[in-house]
Image 1 (cartoon, helix red, strand yellow):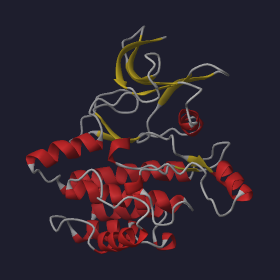
Image 2 (tube, one colour; image 1 turned 60 degrees about the vertical axis):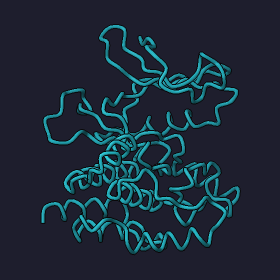
Image 3 (tube, one colour; image 1 turned 60 degrees about the horizontal axis):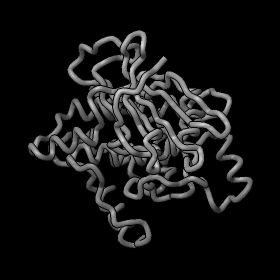
Image 4 (cartoon, helix red, strand yellow; image 1 turned 180 degrees about the vertical axis):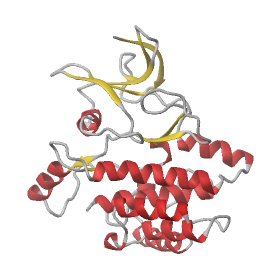
Length: 288
């Protein structure tokens, strides 16, 4: 049994004190968790989608779902792992104020961790098929001082955890969307505009790889978003996409890191590696 401790965010609440994002604790042990409690009248389906995705995923670098509740006409609730070191966005903000450049080994750690999480998503054997995340950005990457089983981490860097699967889509859902309207693509493409891949709304597994490339771009340049003009000015956006693709990260970092980020940021999805290919390349580069 879980009890709420304090509200973390008013998201999903729509002026109601009942709904939102809460820090909660397991009554028996005091173990913390994050509770998302959404009003079924206003919830666009994101919390339900997260339940579907996390119900078929289990990986050290993917947020853990402890429990959920979906009842007709009642609250839509999901109980998630609490990551005590905050988000990558918060880390980047702290570093930008101190003019600190993240060490390359930490960047590789984040790069490999999210590539491993995406490989799990893209090779999922769940009943709904493989999963595309579609909303990879610093605010949706979490840091934890504990392993997935709750044990303290003894390594130099925190565990990196991919969360917020509300915009994700499963293979079966994508197939249905394409049958209904092949030109529309993903019907719920509410991904942050700054992280939309060039092919949007026609997403694929390689769209996640593109967003991972942008994530590492942001981390290396100590910014929480790539600074794109808002969706609608496609000419300016395309020029900036090309600029970033050819100069993705600071000269502080190695050629190996530059080249892999550059591969992720290719405008043509087919020119990008699949997540499992990228993971192999990252591990090979780290060993060289």
